[in-house]
Image 1 (cartoon, rainbow, N blue to C red):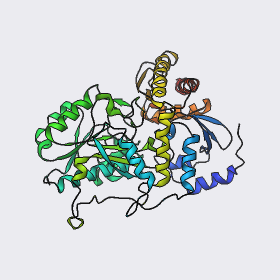
Image 2 (tube, helix red, strand yellow):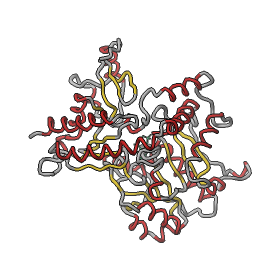
Image 3 (cartoon, rainbow, N blue to C red):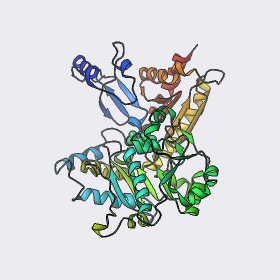
Image 4 (tube, rainbow, N blue to C red):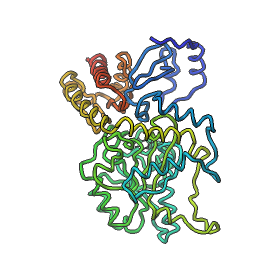
Length: 437
Ligand SMILES: Cc1ncc(COP(=O)(O)O)c(C=O)c1O
């Protein structure tokens, strides 16, 4: 137990009176019986709360953290930059770390393909940038009718208005449908192929989470789907925009998920793991042809009309550079693959150990475990099975979140095998405890 010495009662009062959390029923959160979890410290895969209780960070702090909390190399890089400055404008000036990071990011992608990096702040903005780049590109390069996007069923690309327009998770998106722009929706590469005339004339880009849709309860695309989508986009001259906000930086066992099918997008969106999960920073990376479509004399107005105050934040760039260094120094990708194999074994045996966790899906260190009753049927939605299991798992030392009745396990790459075992065991103990009828 690590005592924090903080005034819990006072903090709880401030929390209940003044804070508003994302995706959170605030009436319940601020109720007298609900104890919000105050996290105060972390090291590696472990986080501890204000009372000194320890937890394994089983969803990598909402899928962001890669090498663990307080990694010495990343902490040092942030501190070093902090002594110079924390932030300067990227509108009209630049700084060394941004230039170095752009070079290092592009060198991770097969040479000569994606060469230009546009920085922003988070996964949603990485997508917004991609949409605006594709839209503006066609407007000023001779195809003004290419204004629409095709996205996939079950997609999640973020919550800003543009990113949520292309999303398709009813709980998150339906209530905003009247403020969304119209999007064509397909559920497979074969269906995409049928939209020949749209692809030929109206479509600016096809947007896809490659290999796996995370928020869609870890839905795995059939093998070869990504390659097929790439071929269709090539055939009709449409941009392929890949959202690797979750899958980027080793999550699926390759540096980028597109490597699994030997393709490269025209526009790549990265965020979450870009800084190792330390600071908000995103990158939208394009090929040279797209970039050149924005070149011209200043008075022609061909510049990309998009930007944010914290674009290319220097502390974020320092963290991102250190993150990439850790990949090299710690041979991270090999570690991810070893852990992923071990996790597969654990998940296989989980289905024998626990009556309620028979189905799971996994790629790399991304896993979703469905909760079903003993006959394999779904629980009634109002029983909140997934939520209850994740809450109960805290007692057994695991922090993670559910999506509906799917428990998500996306552990940090620094997790030990023993820690992975504890995470999976916490899920099975919590499920047995909560779901017994
Ligand atoms: C695939 C994907 N794209 C985009 C986003 C949005 O990222 P952010 O929450 O940083 O805006 C997410 C977030 O979970 C995601 O999983």
